[in-house]
Length: 78
Image (tube, rainbow, N blue to C red; front, side, top):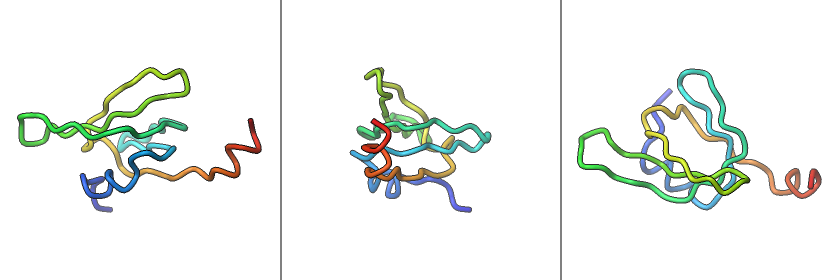
């Protein structure tokens, strides 16, 4: 499986997703807001926020893939 890249991250910006990390953890139902590019070679990070509006960043190299959430399921559970 290829790594989660900047191009694939851009396609998920503004959407609610589940982030599956390479260590097996899953960050559930987050909204991806923007990309941050640092000064180092591998310092790209993606910013997300949870339902409580706390913003966090995670390095792109730690993300295995993102799974898009269905809006109909989100509305049905609310």
